[in-house]
Length: 331
Image (tube, rainbow, N blue to C red; front, top):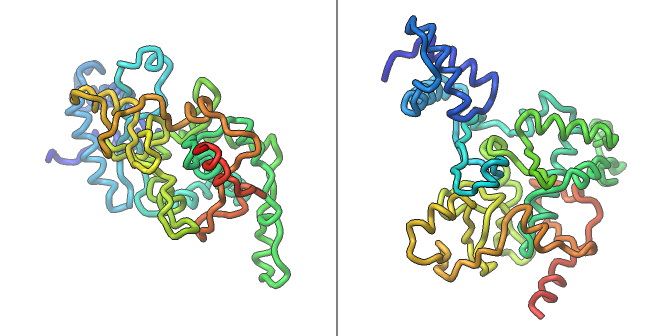
């Protein structure tokens, strides 16, 4: 491996200033760095992917003692040009993530406890209320997100026998304008992304950073003792899936990102589920299309699970009628 020099340090500093980038983003940065180090003008087009990979590898070696790592993932929400031309492959995103500490604790350096509690309610809405056995939405509209500004009464109040410190640390509601501002900041900082239809979902960087926390928080045991897996994974690339398609069999774990599905079926003679081998339906969606194609009745909300890792009150006072919906669908 080449010696770690000033060029590598300059690239790492540029990466840390941005938190995430694509190969196309890195080309002009590396061209400027190499122009200085090599004493000649280097055009961005001269920077190849192999050279970029070498810089990524060197940076990972340098940051690994600090529990940091540059990871990569393909975006699940395609850019406008890619939505109009689905055959265009998405651009891989590289992000600098913390491999050990709680991601919400990291955000606490920027946001107040009340704002962190709002973010937790937002994630609960995505991965619990809008992510049921019948509808794997995993996204929210901006209006739904803003309406979570008010903390449920169980978060705002403490019981009389709790310590004074806990009572003074009770979560307070945000004003609607504060919630709107925080959503804008989360989008600008690369945690949330907004689709053309106005749905908010987690970015590739957020999914890479929050992966372990999401699994620990939202995959647990149900009331009947069976495992509840709200965080799903693509059967092809094994990354978390929040947008794509699923097998028609709800008990099957077959899920595919849109870009993975195209590559996977291109190599197959028939379009079969990669897990159960049944016919792939093509009209069973994961993500915002699940919410828009099969809108949930206004009185239908998912059953809230009992878990110490999530905030039971984060969704407010919700009724448990998911079973009723399942019975209606079966009939």
